[in-house]
Image (cartoon, rainbow, N blue to C red; front, side):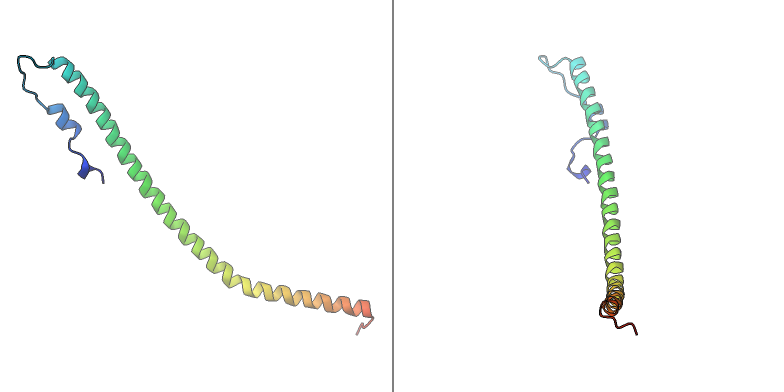
Length: 107
């Protein structure tokens, strides 16, 4: 993903040779600094790979959860109508029995 935007690999940094002029830098200092750059660059690449894996895993989890939500909504809508009508029927029966008791129509 990010590899196409990076110019150097840690190995390329390690193998880089500089020309030395009369007034050039001290090779030991340059090597020491480049070793730090390589270490940071390697760690950075490792972090990027881990984060890319985390994004992939979380995206897959998100897709699964969305599918589960859709499935539960479908189950809920299919179960909602019969249970409401059954509850309403039970309530009407109870009201009818209460009316019979209150009004004295025990038939």
